[in-house]
Structure formats: C-alpha cells, structure tokens
Length: 401
Image (cartoon, rainbow, N blue to C red):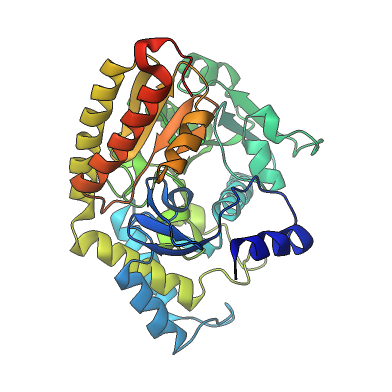
C-alpha cells in the first residue's frame, strides 16, 4: 500500500489517540528503520525503548518462528515451559523473586499495586509515588503517575495515593506513616526527563518501608533489561526492592510485562486475586528468553557501558559547542540532554535528516539507542544532531530554522 492509502485507512478506522507522524514504517533491522517509500532512518529511540537489542534481532526472530510452530498460546490453567524458564532467568539476575507475567508496563504496575495492598493488609492503603514519574495509562497507573497533565478528564482517580518530590528524602519522611502500603518509584525516571535516583533516596525508601511494614516497588519498565549496563537500574544503586516491574525491552519487541516479587510477598497473590489471560504465553516468553540470551552471548551489558561512555563524551562536545545544552545525564544508554529551550523542533529537524530521537518534558531530548549500537552509528547520529543544532543555534542567537 502507498503511504496515502494507509493514512486514509487509519483516519477512517483507527481511533486517533496518538499524535502520529505521517510516515508508515514497514521494516526495521538493528538500529535502522525504513518507511513505506524506502527511506532509511537511524533509530536512536527504538520502539520507545522496547527494541532494546535492536529491531528484529535474529535470535528473537528465530525464537518466535520456532515457538509459533509449536505452541503460540496456552491459558494458565496449565504450565508451559517458556514461562518457567523466563521466570528463573529473571529471578537469578535480580533478587531471587518469583514472577507474574502480563502484557505491558501498565499491567505490571497494576499487579504490583494490587499485590502491595493485598500483602500489607486492609489497614494499609496509601501508595507514595514521586513527582515527575510515569507508570502507565490504566486508572491505577495514571494515579500513581504524579503528573497532573495525565489526570485531566479522568477524575476522580483511585484514592489513597500520596505524591512527593523525586529524590527528596525529607519530603518522603514527612508523609510516611503506618497507613502506607508501598512506595513506587523509578530508579531512573524515563518520561520524567532521565532523572536518576540517588542511592541515599532509594535506601531511605527501603529503610522506611522496613520500619513501617510497607513495600518498596521499583518501576524498571524503562530502566530494566540492561539499558543502564546492569540488568536492572536499581543495581547501580545497590538497593533491592520487594517488587519490581518490567516490560518494554523484556520481549525484544514482543508485548510482555512482568513483576518479580520477594517469595514471601509473592505468596499473597493466590488464585483468584489477579490474572492475565495472555500473560506468560509461550510466544512472548520465548522472545524474552532469546532477548536475555542475546544480551549475554553478545556481551551487550559491557557494550552498553562502553557505548554509553562514548555517547556522553560526544554529547559533552556538543554541550561545549552549544550553550543551549545545559546538562547531559543518565546511566549507560539511558541518556537525557537537558535543553534551555523547547526541543520539539530539534527532534523534527533530526527526523528530516534521517535520525530519530525523542523529546520529553518539552526540554529533554532522550538518546536511548539499542544496546548493540556501534561507534559508527553513534558518530552518524551525533553528526546529524551537530548539524541540526548548528542550523538553529549557530552564534547562540536562537533564531535559526
């Protein structure tokens, strides 16, 4: 189909709840994508961080093909081998928890919130979350998301949620009491602008939860699965949670979500308390297994650290050249470029030149390439960004374009 036909089809039959670009993407490989007209783009934000090991990784493709020929779906009335194998792999690489599988990050957050309230008992109902965080679009998840713009049109929200500033220990201590069931926080806020939690902050959450019989939930939907150079973002701070949420890169592009919970906490999720019809299906779990195997066999954690440092050096050079870049922050290949002005126009111009990046919180560019990215591809991406910044900010007059 021609691009025009697809756009007309969407206009007639698909709900317009996304602000889409007028391009049809029909092929992806590694860090490259192609539109329906055959134009190639360098993707430095693949699948909104879903394609963490690149588009259509060969190991994932082969695992899906193989599993599709054996068993695509089986309900959780029965056991299936890929689900158990993936659960073991996640447990052994994290904190020894037990897993529940679903289909998305929002579903994982819902499961974590329900488990926290179920486990801690009816006297505990409050959930503390951090301002600037993002946890998903379901009613529970948007309530946990302490950003008013996501609440508009959906009030009243789920009761019992308390918001505190991110990384603010004093504010956390001020609201903590024996009615708190859990604290949910991202070790690194993604949509919130690539803001990294301090070790002190996570440790204080951990200590307060232990003192008051509450649970610590780390939302690793975006920071997990090797994105930071460690399997999970919290491992950079060394503070373990009671429950961890996962999704995005877990399936190498296939829809899958999960929580991992300490065994004594997981025991509260008994039959009848929570479920997911598609959760843990063999196809998605086979893709998850292949993703973990690819990360290990191709040394992608090490490459993430190495390429992350290389990107920071290159972005640091851009920062020296263009004062509009106020800060470069993040861990591994989860990087944010804080601008002193809105960044949407930069993103649009980069796309026109064949580079995909992202802007969040209006002024933060997200640079989050696949874990198997190379220096050559990084150089190409930074070159396009340099050219784009130069066109707009040459002489720092801010009157370009």
